[in-house]
Length: 77
Image 1 (cartoon, one colour):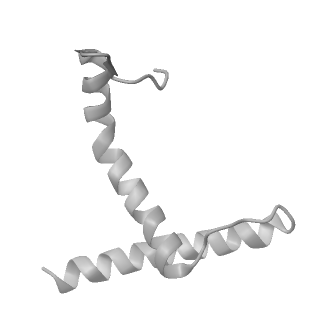
Image 2: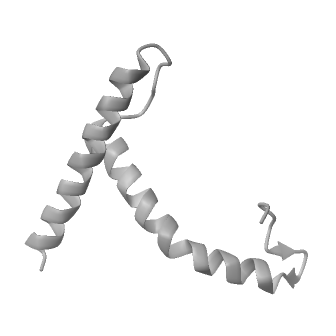
């Protein structure tokens, strides 16, 4: 489905709103981990030279972000 606004004037498009509600839980999990990678680990910009090294750094950052989220979940439980 294309990115269209769910509110057109005063009319709310119900199918688009329902689709957004289905996607929201998945989007939250993904964006939370990306936020941790950007904020905590400082992975903000990627230069397109040496992509193998950048991919390795991204994979390591994703692994560390997963560990950070797991540690926080265990400490607060």
